[in-house]
Image (cartoon, rainbow, N blue to C red; front, side):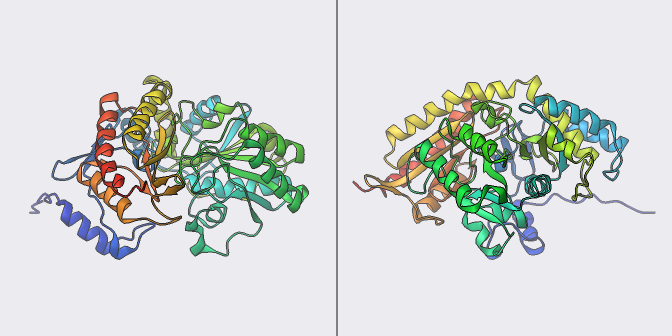
Length: 445
């Protein structure tokens, strides 16, 4: 006779110890990691095994847009898992047909065909392949203040210092100027940024350039919102030279900015658009490359040299279709638009109160506070690609007071789930208010 004994639940300390001992962490010095153990999550709250709750003020990695634990998505995952778990991508399924139809009905303009991947980095990799195969050209233009993912091609397109360890990377990637320079509180004039791109196109030879890649709104490198006219100007330059425009909407998409996709704020349709994160609200891994009809049609008579074992994975697709329904049923895109002014008011209040706030930005619920040591001259709280004792203390304060968000370089990110209430949003900013008092001590003049 076999007696089954239920395993006792682990404590936070046990979970952290075993995870550190047997698993490898991303973007980390392994001996320095100090992870938070999470048992479950509901709405905008994370809960530790001991029952302590943590406000998720960054939607994890700007990705859990609908909030945690939504039963409508969980039930859809279970239903699909009970019906069909996996077939290889040469087969088709009802969930693939339904999601394809639904998603392309939401995409801007004539973007109406999607290649499904398992995440944003894979979407970028395949956007590179599609652009090169479609145009017959090999050069890709990308910016310095950009993050496109951690696989080899995506990492090469990434301009920030995270690419250094993987260099040399993909052949043919060329940088063009950013809209925002490091250490400046506002974007450069539109004409200057577009002239910089036009110069690079001229110097490199437009006939050699397959695509211009850009995050519609730069994410982890600072929530850098382009000035009006810039996105339209990039579109015009690409059209003029027969270059594909590729919009990376992995972070900015799916309601984050108060539109389904951030590029809709500028009434522009890219040739290719990458997506992930909010596509399933990170309940399961899924990404995609959307393409305009004329691009897709070229591959009707030409081989596409690309593929993934888990492309169009049925359970991930089920999570996505259910997630899209939640956005619609709960009016989350409209809610993010309405919360735009609410978040901005919090930013403005903190900037008026705390001399350490040098700049702030948001569009919908995509926001950030930049901290400074001095306003004149404008001096960020950290050097480029660095931290400081003050920023470390700010991060520690937030953690000790039950708020999780990204504290990176001299910035505090403010990117909560789109379902957050005004009360919970205010609570998060009250905790940030306390943290800023630490940073204020470093302000000079």
